Image 1 (cartoon, rainbow, N blue to C red):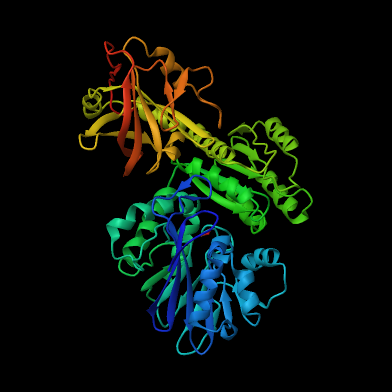
Image 2: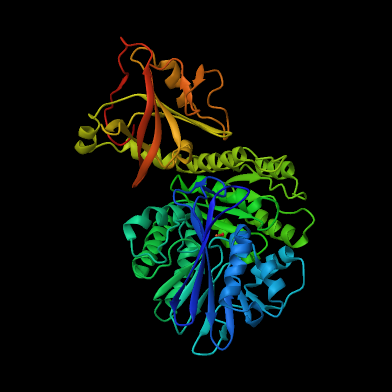
Length: 572
Ligand code: FEO
């Protein structure tokens, strides 16, 4: 059954299927969800997967998003009397999986809630009512009977510190929640159509898991100690059964590549405090766009030795201010401050938790110690908006670019290859891409642009992965391609080549008018076309963005397009 949620008029449906002996998936299909957190644009909706395992005892693994309240609870009651459920296993406490825990416990007050120590701490705050709980550690087991012996694998930071996996020794299913998931909604329960799902699998990894690559590697190591894993029963998207090994190996390959990055930034935050986790994720995503590795560390869950180790091996440190009145976290911050060394680069953001450690004394302290600043302190005076998250992501990118500046210059100078010189003889035009989406906007000087199709009219644009505008050029997004004019492009080029502060208005002082699609047309451009992103191809350090053209106009018919000549092919 498909229902339209009253608030959003978006399609919601539920699908159940037996996926192994005594094991049923309850998949909540959110067909039209187009955004997940911050800048995570979804092309194919998403699902929230929950699982029922019926041995002699019965366990439910995770619940669903609260928007599925009625549908989910009715479906569950159709499968089993909730009063017969012995365990509710919580893999992770974000509301898309735990949003119905309170409702579930109202129907099944006898159930014991099982989770990691951190998960149960979060959940206690969230549920606001007493419930029976059982904290499990790595390797702990619960025997459900009929051969279903469950073993728990603690997998912190995938992508919250609370995460744990559950392995059923009978069915050889590993329940992983966010890890190995993807935002992809379809009637298919499994991953048989690999080519359909792999772009979303990769994108999901980049957004959620890449900032936690070292934690992914640790989790893979723990997974390696289990017997065979036949199926990965994830929390989002198709369940991995046809290509399990292949898709797990991709996580290993991508995470090893991330972890090998020459430089690392440690991002310290406080889960479940203000907007610390979301803001830190946006910053981490900005940093990883530049090829710099990130290690996320929760003040609440870290022990002093870990803080010391991570701080001393990182090139850069980002600190989300912890609560000023929490002694445990103040001690953690003290450990961090004691471990920071000269030559490291540091940045600080407020979490808007109502009790933030004051930011200015910290900034002064770092300045006086001679530490470089990765980005200007982010002071948040209101509930973060999309623009604030964009500012955080751009600040992260600035931080990463600052750390990789020397590497980039070295690479540019190392021009001794005939191949690079020959490649440099490819010439292109000069363009400025402009985009506006709600309160977010961006602009970028581009030269790797070419027409790519006649029917429909289409262009491809290569966009470096560390460009801020990249998050406004996801499938379905609209933008304007402004074509610059020979002899009349210097002012525009100079303006858009400037370094802008994170979140700064790129269009201040520039004449623009809105296109039909809402993005700015630069009045001084020779021509413009309005584009809509149709697909993206991952090309190592660039995205190739293929877009169809909706509209366009030439301002000066006699004008010629500005041409960009280069000498070498290892930079623009
Ligand atoms: Fe799917 Fe982190 O929740």
